[in-house]
Length: 138
Image 1 (cartoon, rainbow, N blue to C red):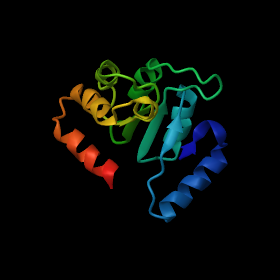
Image 2 (cartoon, helix red, strand yellow; image 1 turned 45 degrees about the vertical axis):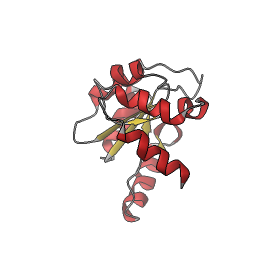
Image 3 (cartoon, helix red, strand yellow; image 1 turned 135 degrees about the vertical axis):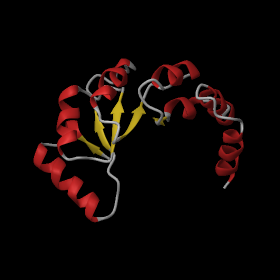
């Protein structure tokens, strides 16, 4: 993961080039408009918008709503942080269909149920829960 906030332009470009040389897809993380513009200069295949402010640790889902339209559709867009419910998925599905979900699953007493709840917002069938259950047992 290349966190744009933590890198100057030269470092960002160099690390991105190394990822390409290693046949890796770099996850380029942004949190504001300036970082989106900096990220776009390196022409990434994937940009992750983090809804968690790394300075204050506050979460604001409108970050993705504000930044995703600035990213061309040719780039894979991933929403990260603060996704707690099917309503959050439904809201954010207007700007992306890719989600990185961690904390709400880690806090859940029923991970399979939580995955089914979140997937239901996208109309994904119950097979997701079965696949997740198999993966968790391996």
